[in-house]
Amino acid sequence: MMKKLILLTMLVLMSLPAFSATLTGVRYKETAAKINAAAARMPSMTCDFTQTKHLAMLREKMVSKGKMYYRKPDKLRWEYVSPYKYTFILNGAKVSVANNKRNDVIDTRNNKLFKEIARIMMSTVTGRALSDTGDFTITINETAPTWDVTLVPKRKNIKQMFSKIILKFRRTDCQVQQIELYEKNGDRTEIKLQNIKTPSPVNDALFSIS
Amino acid sequence: MTRFLVYLSLLLTGGLSAYSQNPDALPQDTVFRYGFEMSMQKAGLTGVALTRLDNNAISGSIINEFGVSALDFTYDIRRGKVKLNHVVSFLDKWYIKRVLRADLRVCLDRLYGLSDRMPKKHDVLQNGSTLTVRNLAHDISYSFTPLAHDSQQ
Image (cartoon, rainbow over all chains, first blue to last red; front, side, top):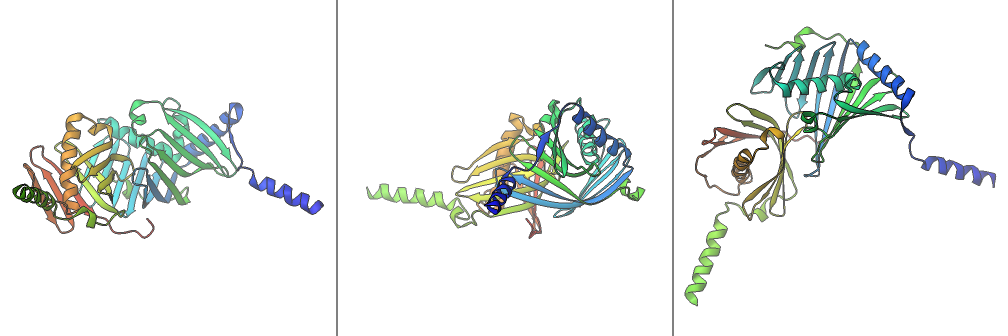
């Protein structure tokens, strides 16, 4: 009888949904502060990434892979290696986008769209997005391994691109593990960061824009 | 009566021969992936184009390298009509969409071997595996280069 009771208890516990809670009040503020502080402290980072685009209309996914390099405060290199070659470099106010055939340099001071793209990329991969309360409505959901931060855009230009962005931070070190981008047409892009090294020596040449 | 039947059969034959390839003979439900580039006078778009043929309609998406959607479309092959299901904001103007619909039809007809017709003010170039369609009136070009197959897709 006792054995049956223990087995039944275990079955009930195993069937419960994974732990998840939306943070509010003091808990929210403390967690947001921890994540912001960790992002502000991070001097540099390198990682590999796998980007999976889920296309709603085609019922298909597209996988791309690459490498990312970051140096505080405003240098980012996002480089795709398969199945296409494409490099995005942000260095201060300048952005360079290059593929096999062309290389374009944009000054973000003169191009609002690229300025927004650069800002979103920088703040999502570093975790600084929690400071963007003017641009996003932010909620934090706590799970066992992660804090899942949901950013819902307030401004029209970002709303046109994304309905929401979710950043998943590892709770042990407040490090971004995954970025999810949700679009209005039902598409979703997941970017998983792997082999994360921080701090990491990063050569200046990687951010060079000619 | 006989003359009527002859005319009818000529009409039907003529209609069928407008296709270089019978859509029913094309690989159904296979997704093709291309490196994509669209160049205009003052702007451009690069990324990936994905297409799938399913029951006489080609569905497609054009996304940029970051995965952000630029275009979703459906091409009804029998009716010869392209429908734009989703368009990124900087292309979302009626006069641009009208040109896009016409140009996408030319591109898809060539990519799938559906038609050899050359519409007025268009040009087609095959350079190795890259197909380029040019709209000469508006100075827009569309290039499609097959992407290497990734077994993890």
